[in-house]
Structures are given as C-alpha cells and as structure tokens.
Image (cartoon, rainbow over all chains, first blue to last red; front, top):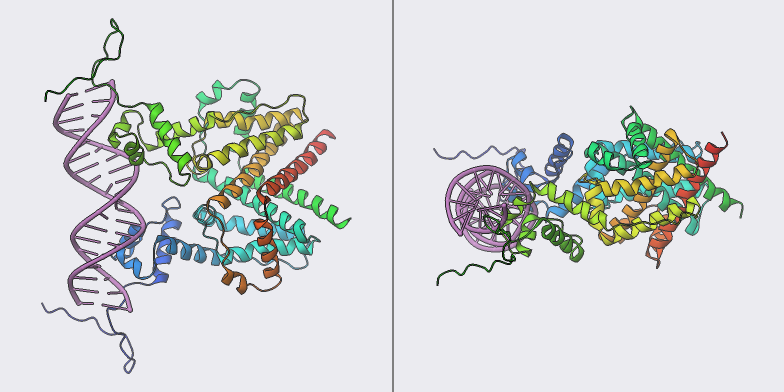
Length: 231
Length: 231
DNA sequence: ACCTGAACACCGTTCAAGT
DNA sequence: ACCTGAACACCGTTCAAGT
C-alpha cells in the first residue's frame, strides 16, 4: 500500500522540476471554459464548473489566474484569436465593410457569449481592437479623416454590432408574444404588431434583416463620404 | 412577557382578514428592487438582497412571486411604466423619431439595468411593446407599409438601441486603453487608435455621437421612404 | 394567509496545510 | 511549485413547520 510515485516523463539528463507537478495549465482551463460555452451557450463561465469538468479543486485555478476576471480576460482573448479577416484589397470599400460585417457576425454566432464579455464585462481585447480598427482603415481609404473618420468608425461599429446584438439576443431568448398582450393593444398598433410578428416569423428573416441593416449603414456612410469629398 | 398582539388598523365593523397579516407586498418588493438599482446600477437584482433590505426572510418573497424571473418581469414592467412619450402631432416624422429616441435614451440612462432586462433576460413588456410600435406608426405616416414598414421599424430600433447600448456599456465599464497594447499596434492602426481615443475623451462626445447616429439613421430612413414613395 | 428556519446545491474567494 | 480542504459570505429554491 505504499504510494507509487508517478513516472517522470522527462528525458534522462533533464533536470527534474522541484515541487509538485502540475495537473493542469492556463491553456487547459481556458479551453475547458470555451468548450463549456460551445456545448451550452447560456451556461456562463463558472470556476467551480470548470474545476468539476477537469477534476481539480476549484482553488487550483487560482494558481493560473489571480481571479475570475483574469480568466474571463484570457477566454476573451482566446475566442477573439479565432477571428480572421482577409479583405480583397482591390474590392471597393463597401464590399470590404460588408465582408468584415459578415465575418464578425459569423464569429459571434459561433460564440454568442463573446459579445457579453466584450460589451458588458468590459473585456476589450487587443485582438478585438485590431479588428475594429480595420474599419477605420477602410473608411480612411474611402476618403475620410480627422473627426469625420472617428465618428464614421464609431457609427459603423454601433450599427453592425447593434444588428448582431439584436439577432443574438432574439435567438437566445426568443420573444414569445403573449396573445393576451396583443389583444390589449388598440388599432392601428395591433395591426402593426401582427405584421411585425408575421415578418419575424418568416423563414430567413435574420439574414434578410442583417442584409438590410448593412445596406442602410453603407447608404449612410456613402452620404457622409460623398459630402466629405466634395468639400 | 406575554406577547402583545399588534393593534388591528381596520375600522370597526370591517371583517378582520383571517390568517397572518402581511409584512410586505408585491409593490413594496418591486419598489425595493428598483431603489437598489437606482442606488447601485451595477448591483443586479437579488432576492436575498431585497429581503435583507426590507427585513423579511428571503422566502417571504415567494408568497408574491413564483420565482426570480416573475419578479424581474414585474420590475421590468414597473420601470417601463415611467417612460412616457408625447409627440407633437404636427411635427415632421424626422422630429418625432428624434424626440422618441431622446426620450428612450434618457429613460435608459436613468435605469441602465433595464436594457439588460429587456435584451438579455428576454423580459419584453407590454409597455415596451407599445413604445416600440410608436416608431411603426410614425413610419407608416411617413409613407411606408407592408414589409418595407416592418424592415424600417426593426432597423430603427436596432440603430437607436445600438447607440444607447454602446453609450451605456461604455459608461458602466469604461474602456481603459492599455498603453502597452496601443504601443504594440503598427501604423497606421496606432494613429487611428490614438485619434479615436482622443475623440472619445473629448467633452460631450456621448451627446455628439448620439446625435450623429440619429442623423445617420434618419438619413437612411429618408432614402428608404423616398424610394418607396416614388414607386 | 402569510412568514420562518433548516436544508440543499450552487457561486467566488481567503487562508492554512499538505506534497 | 502546485494542489487541497475547510471556511466564509454569497446566491435561488424546496419543504415542513409555525402563527
């Protein structure tokens, strides 16, 4: 019943590290957190849950991260790393903005929790910053500069992220319209409500609306750029 | 040391209600939740916290609400009730949309948590529905109908709520730019970053950006309406 | 009719002790 | 160097018991 020491996997000659050998790593913990979110998008990130999953004591995580927030930061960074965007340099700026928007949309579709991390928990990552600044670059090439460029950049982010945001939140917590509530509405509100309801129940209305939102954004940008150029 | 029964506040002749007298009410619980959020916008809504505040056992709340979700629903409804909007019927539709946007913005500024309740916890309230449908009515008056009206309505919501959303999330969790991160960027990205940073640090850039976002939204809507009219 | 306390399964985090 | 267990202060919720 004497405890058998685990075999040392190090090649002969390599110095054995002092102290207790690690059971896990930063990378494994982050990967586990992401795996949980991919399985259950609504689960949230819990230290206890992760510890259960990789069969360590919850406290072991504190050897790799100072606290929950630092772990969230690492998860954010790691999720963002999966987002790659390559624009065709020859394409007009409208196409590039569209391609950027679709790439970002697809990424947030894969990691719905990411938008929560970025927006509500304030975990801006350098990777996200870089991607966001691509829009600035595109708009600069299109002829904007100075404050007009800053404003147009923020507007574009707002607009595209707003579209992604509303699409995700509707998917995660579908608005179930209470028939009773609708019945209480007066005309013409009830008619409008019904039309809207039918529209959002129609087949591919998410794609339809994202496209529409994107077109409106580009339309507004085109106006700004044109006015700026003719000054 | 005989326990003294509390005096019955009912007028003589009125029948005394059977059973134990209540220590609180639905209204008091909801009011307490809102009071907590007004004091500490980042606090979140906790049954235990509310119970501590009004000095009852946490379980007493379950006499008034089936569960936490039902309480959140009531809080949402109550918060929305404070939002009143009266448009000048004679004003052009652009002014009405602007007035609507500013009213909604001010309300969410007062209750930052409300956007969380509506967007992420899926507590659509009838009061919110009514307000949202006002936009549909405005756009219908401006000449839209059918699918074009539905699309334009959703776009307007998206756009305005996106602007409010980003304003709030920046206020609640201010993006502190890591100098180190900025230094790692290459030109022209670093230059763009710096310009953006300076812009968002300037005095009233929140008001400035909301106005800009609103103008872009109206611009895009004007385009849609014009094309629809000329068909 | 309404309130309470004990109990359960969660959560993040500190601290002291183990290997 | 890394892991563990006990402890603390939270959280929502069920159930049985009190008034």
